[in-house]
Every structure is written in structure tokens, then in C-alpha cells.
Length: 293
Ligand SMILES: NC(=O)c1ccc[n+]([C@@H]2O[C@H](COP(=O)([O-])OP(=O)(O)OC[C@H]3O[C@@H](n4cnc5c(N)ncnc54)[C@H](OP(=O)(O)O)[C@@H]3O)[C@@H](O)[C@H]2O)c1
Image (cartoon, rainbow, N blue to C red; front, side):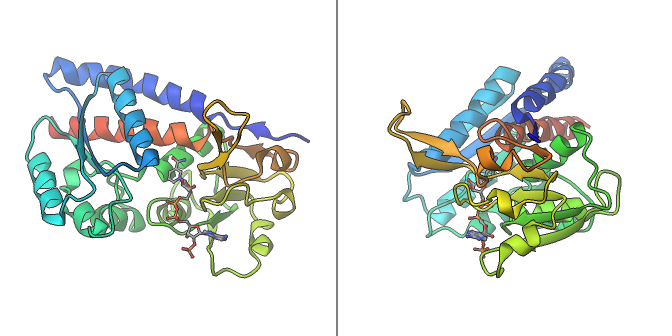
């Protein structure tokens, strides 16, 4: 049996297409949705992510304001910029690309973004709302996964979802979304992390297995229950002299081998990644709509 491929790229394109009428309607009211992205330093991966978000904005007619600051920017300078963006009527969403340099307290920065513009949903307030089932802005990656499951007719209700990875931006919010007492959720959730002994004991019980670890091809076929839905969040760059750029991107799942065991699987690239961008765009449009109320 070969798994069904869950096409995140096509689904993301569909979602972006569906946003167009709402963006048009906002423009008719004189509102152009605007996203401000703040990037510190020269980390190549962060620069790529910000450029991808900028491009998605441009294609949809969303204003993109990129603030590329030096690595040595102080915490108070960054807080002052966020304050300015909080007060700027042209900016409906603010994101600070993570990770920020060590001398900056990322939580302090994330919590300084006003709730109405926290389109990444990483502030303590936004994460708390997800936990208590009063969603505001849901972080784009977990939201993208929930939307992918829904659009592929995969109902988590009554299923055992096992998430490997407990980060604040993927694992923890996703666990909360999957366990909510509501339609499209109601899963039984297990979270594994680097201190979990014998992870495969847990992953083999998963009806829905989500890998958000950051270790290339960590999930092998013998860790997967036959027929399971496998969602690969990982984006890892590995050397490949045959590739034009000298590297290629792989997920946390050994895709070629696991697709022979799984019932459905997301590829990397073309799975969760494009959904993250699409859901961020969706959150920006939602923020702009709320600003016009
Ligand atoms: N597709 C997208 O749009 C998207 C979005 C965000 C992230 N990502 C990718 O997803 C991956 C995870 O991102 P993240 O930000 O959540 O990473 P993170 O903050 O580094 O968290 C990684 C998690 O995986 C756990 N872990 C690491 N190595 C492990 C191992 N050998 N066995 C078991 N657990 C292990 C860690 O455990 P501890 O907590 O014990 O340290 C941690 O909970 C990365 O590849 C990242 O690039 C992709």
C-alpha cells in the first residue's frame, strides 16, 4: 500500500485564492491589509522565511513592511519598533521572525505585540486563549495542520494523535487544538520530546502522527502504525552535492520509506510549509477585517 499524498501546496493555493474576495472587499472599504515583519540579523533560514511571506503578501495585494535590523539591535530598540507598529493604522499584523538573538527576551517582545495584531499567535495571551478554547489568532503552522486534516476529510475525533516535539510554536498549540471539545478536534493526544524514552512505543500507537522535531528523517517506517496519517512539520537542510544549491530540504520523516506504510502523508517540501504561509495570510486578512469593524 502506498500512502495518499496530502498536497499542502495545492491546498495552500486554494486557501489563498479563497482570500482574494475578502481582500477585494476590504479594499472597497479603503482598507489594504498590511503585515509588518521584523527580522534581526542575517540568519539565512530566517531571511528565506521572511522573503517567502513578503512574496505571498505581494501576490495577494497585502501590504508588506519588512524591518530588517542588525543583529546588535537592543531589546529596548526592538520594543520601541513594536510600539510604533502597534500604533500604525496601515499595519494590521505584526510578526517578529524567530529566533531572535540571545540578548533579547523573545517572550517580552512577543507579549508586547497588541492582541489585535498578533497574527503569529505566539504571545502568552494568544496561546492562553487557544488552551482555553477561545481562539483568537492561532499560530499558522498548527492551524495549517488542522485545516489540512479537515480538507482531506481526516476527522481527529476519537483518534490517537501523537506529536513528537513540544515547542511553543508547533507541538504545544497543536496538542491543544487537537484535544479541544469541538468538531474537527476531540483527539486523544500524546506529546513526546527529547526526554521520552523509546519514542517508537508511542508513535506506533498513533492514528495521526505529527513530527515537529528538526531531525532529518527521524521517523522510520517501523515507528509508524500501518495506515496512519503522517504529518511532517520538519524543514531540515541537508548537504546534497547533486542539487543546484548544494543542499536540499528534507522533513523529520523518512518520506520514501514511510509512505509505503502510512495511509496518508505530507511531503517536504510541499506539505505543511506552504500551509503555514497561507494561514498567516489568512490571519492578516482576519486582523484587517476586525480593524474595520
Ligand atoms: N513547516 C513549517 O511551516 C514549520 C514551522 C515551524 C517549524 N518547522 C520545522 O519543524 C521542526 C520543529 O520546529 P520547532 O520550532 O518546533 O523546533 P524546536 O523549538 O527546536 O523544538 C523541537 C522539539 O523536538 C524535540 N526533539 C528534538 N530532538 C528530538 C529527538 N531526537 N527525539 C525526540 N524529540 C526531539 C525537542 O525536545 P525538547 O523539548 O526536549 O528539547 C523539542 O520539543 C524544525 O525542523 C523546523 O524547521 C516547520
